[in-house]
Length: 331
Ligand code: NDP
Ligand code: GDR
Image (cartoon, rainbow, N blue to C red; front, side):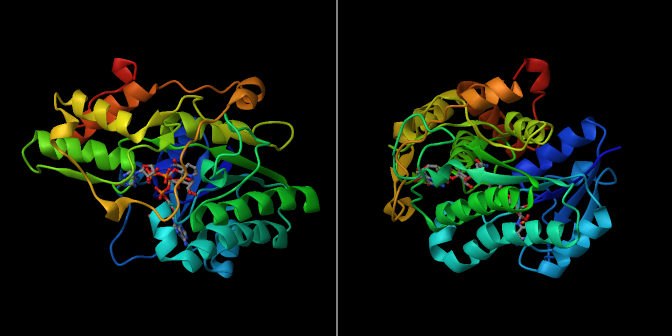
């Protein structure tokens, strides 16, 4: 039985990845941080099926301990301060978690002499930042536009550096935005679908948003964790762009989400400068050709299905109903 360790197991991607690895017969271990209230909402249903270890990416010794205890074949480093606006408010902490944290995990593997461990780093399309080339590929120059993006560039290159310096099996997945009903409520897709559901149910009247013109390549998180696993099953480690190859404006997301609940967005959306960023990433569109050719990966859920799914899930959740059965509906 293979063993995997996931940092960031309580996050959106961590929860989907843990489910996928359990399905594949892995023994799954996850890193959780100590907090006065638990943040296990996304993994409560996996209680008793996965092994949780307390550690923190800020604490080198705790990372060494958790790797020793769990003795994994694969490590998926998903933990990060992942919300872009917070990275302007807490740039140093973001660098400690999102950049140097990667080195702490890699160093723990190296110091323990466990170079056989396969390592996945959660890199991001935010690294592309200011448009240099469209669509963006593995070789597009990086020009990050936020402290988060800068930190991810460090994480990306230190992963490549450990592969080249120590011959370790290290992969970097450059993932474009991916969403789901488990997405944090501050990210735009979930903020919109949660807002639509509240308005539909009479719990709110308006939704305050920032820049509606930026464009993102949005996919479904469940599809993207499959790509992470596939990367670690290859003969040689490499870096891959994971994206749908389609881009949409935030405005289009808003239109679709309100329409999914039978509402007109123009009656409810208020533009609020508080949500406009100091520097914006205007256009992201990824070319997943390498992942398609080498990993046999492709996304299954379309943008339209994703938005509909998230609106339905938020409506059900706010009404205290069980989530719709998406699989049965082919979504
Ligand atoms: P989330 O924000 O949902 O989850 C982040 C996870 O990191 C949480 O489990 C959080 O724990 C954990 N974490 C944060 N800081 C620390 C720390 N110091 N020590 C240990 N754990 C910590 O992110 P996603 O699941 O959406 O994303 C997963 C990864 O992929 C992140 O690295 C993100 O930057 C990256 N990424 C995400 C994309 C997306 O569109 N979702 C696209 C590209 C990259 P806690 O619950 O305690 O806060
Ligand atoms: P992003 O995601 O910054 O791309 O990072 P987010 O959903 O926060 O923003 C996407 C776009 O929407 C615009 N926007 C708003 N965003 C938020 N959050 N709130 C608003 O009110 C709002 N109004 C407009 C933003 O300006 C932006 O252009 C996500 C994260 O998951 C990162 O961790 C990950 O690395 C990248 O995706 C790929």
